[in-house]
Length: 289
Image (cartoon, rainbow, N blue to C red):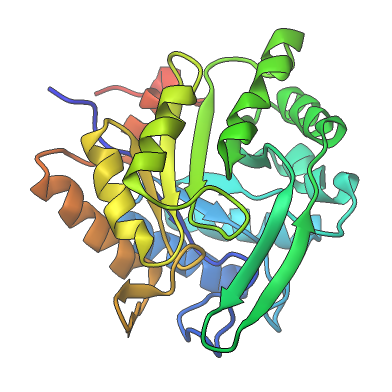
């Protein structure tokens, strides 16, 4: 019997607004409601960025604490908090991980250009340099190790995977390794199955991995990942659409579609308890199949 597929739902991100998609959650209660609906649809992990009431990015530990409390009051889904930001000091980006100790902390594994380009208007949007030098990565890893939080290694290109080698050699990055292969961001690796195969072949032996396809590329990539034995992430952070030209009504709608793809390919989805055991997260020793 094959290992069940772990589905993550990325609930809100930092860039998309309700003007683009009315389903984007902002407040802790709204984010927790989306987490519950996504879990009910089949997600075993939720990936969360905090927002302020106007929809901008929020880094107050108190806000993350409200989100965590609200989520755990509704569901036993595994919680993954982001640390990714541009122009925010490292201490501020890690404070909620240290204080709240979620199950997983997302950790960007390298620097890159990060942009959105409009072919129609011939211009760039969100044109940034996303800086993640080794000293910051090491700082985040040491903080996560101290808090007992699993780092989720977010890799936007093949070089980001290679960046793990010195950290493993130093002993600051410890197994089990958990990778997210983010594909289709301008400035990173293209979102094609051919490139996914190369990414997976580059991973350290025994790694857990999931694919994150940006935009409508997500559906072909997640199907390929399932067939290759990987896990998957969907959600409004990655794509606002359920199909070409059709806005998603919720994260749960995307999760439900992902579940159908998994099951139509002959696999099963993991429950939160099963995902905790598969990924060897804290609390896995209490899981019984």
